[in-house]
Amino acid sequence: MSAFEPDHLRADLHTSPNFGPRNDGKRPSILILHYTGMETGEAAESWLANPQSEVSAHYLVHENGRIVQMVPESERAWHAGQSSWKGETDINSRSIGIEIVNGGPLLGFPAFPGSQIDALIDLCKGIISRHGIRPESVLAHSDIAPARKIDPGEKFPWSVLYDAGIGHWVIPSPVRGGRFFSLGDQGQPVEALQSMLALYGYGVPIDGVFGPSTQLGVLAFQRHFRVEKVDGVADMSTIETLHKLLSALPALTA
Image (cartoon, rainbow, N blue to C red; front, side, top):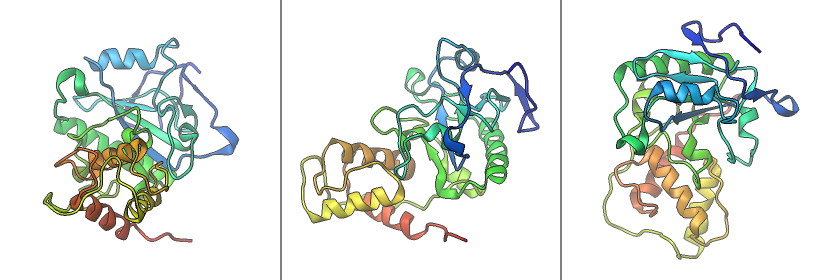
C-alpha cells in the first residue's frame, strides 16, 4: 500500500509497510498508548516505517502536536507485541496503537508538552467515536505487557485525558500506612487482590500467591492509576484505588 486516505483528517501520511489484516474478522475495541523511547521523533518515525524493524503503529504524535498516520485503522499494526488483556492475546487485531514521541528513560522521562497532549486528545476522540471504544479500554502499553513495557510511563497525564472525556480514571487514594501485600505473601486476601486485577483486565494468575506475575500486574496498575508510589507493593492506597476503579466502571449497554 503506497498511500491511503487518512482516518484522522488532520494527520499527515507516512505509510509503513509493517501491517497486515486483522485476524479472524476482529475489529478494534482497544486503544493502546505508547511512548517512542527514542532520541527524536524523526528517528522514531523512520523506525516505524522501516521494514527491518517489524514494528509499526497506526499513528505517531510528535512533540509539537503534528500527527502522522502510518497504518490505516482498518489494518493490523504491529505495536503491542506479546501481550494480553481480559484473556485476549492477539491485541494487535483488537486495537489501535498510538506512539507518542517521548524519550522515556533514554532522556530521563521528559514531560509531555501541552501541544502534544492537545493533539493526542483530538486524535483519541475521533478513534473512540469511530470504533465505539469504551473508556476502560483506553490502555497503556504497560497494562497489556507488564513484564516487558513501562510506557507511556508515570509522567503520562491520564487525568488530563480523563477530564477531556478519554479513558477511565479515579482520584487515587492517598499513600499511607496499613496492611499491604508483597512478593512471597500467600492466602485468600492475595487471591482477592488477583481477582480484582484480573476483573479489570490484567493478566495475573488467581492462585493466592503473590509471585512475580502479580507484582508486575501491581506495578502496571500503579503506573497508570496510582503514580505517587510505583513499587509493586499492594498497599492500602493501591487496593482502595483498584476497588474504586472497579466500582466506577461504566455500565454495559445492550
